[in-house]
Image (cartoon, rainbow over all chains, first blue to last red; front, top):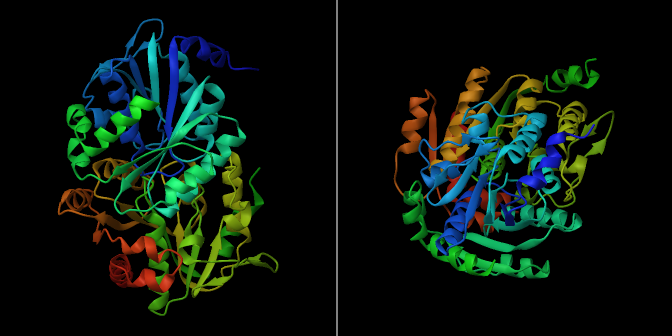
Length: 240
Length: 240
């Protein structure tokens, strides 16, 4: 029997103009930082923006934003709080920020539940911090979220980029739109990711230089926008 | 009904003296590099060592070792090839190095199958490159592999360490032995990880400085042992 909640998801997202999943086949590439900064950058331009943390392996946007005790409120669904100008929702409001991980079916269930209950209202952009990897949760997300587009984050490391290429091949097979690739934590000049991206017929957005200041800016959206990462992501926000 | 393969796993591992899972709650921290280098370092000391790549999200030890066309052979089970002096097995010999990820139950099944068919023979150490995160595969691994011990890898990043701390709390709840914590990719002095590790009553093994030479050493075990990462991991290999 079809889960009645899946049919409500399109309805919940109908007033959201664009849905961008920031994603990486590989963890630890700065995906959550790029997702959060992209949401902040789009909001700074004057757009109405939501940020949705669906990184079931290590939710961290609440730390990056310094969300403190913000909580959704209930009103025929969950109304996300406003954090740093964003309409903000995280799976930690569902599962708590606990050690015990959700197992496979529970994760699928939590994802459906979160998508079905969250009341986003009218948004220009909903930025999703996606789970890393190309496992079940990414496939569920692609199946459940209409009009989803991907922005892919990698680092210059060949180990990261090899995994990211697998993810891209998979998304292409599934015919999911990919906006392009961002190369984060760049330390030395190299064209491997740029050329590899172009060979996959994708847009290469930008190199983001490695910036020690980012670590200190965690918890402060204003400081984050002022880092080199912040500058670069604001440029990306002009072109997505 | 119990899976008959699970009962064979202990038998398969009975001549392996110690089993060390190199693991990280967070991806992209250099776990596979540390696991591979630890295996190489123990072998260099004269131990008989196996390396088992069970990182279902992004298997990469074959790239790090430059394993080329090495393949297991069949003989009432799978006999792992020798690569750089290690008895080497990877899930890519099971699933292929393809884009399409295994879904939850398939991953569980692949893990059981790999553990049940691989003929390790007599080993001093079996080093496992574990899947990142604290999801199903880590829990399966803990359940299926007798005498498993964990070596935890993190980076100095607070986002990485927060996730790693969750993993440690979970492993402690499950009463799984943890050898200690390695802090990888250290760039600037800070005591956060060292102090956090000690507060969790765990051994803080070492800081591994960030070393650009590591990227160039991928594919060459000898070069890898000569990097700063190689030096530090060889020190760790003396004390595990």
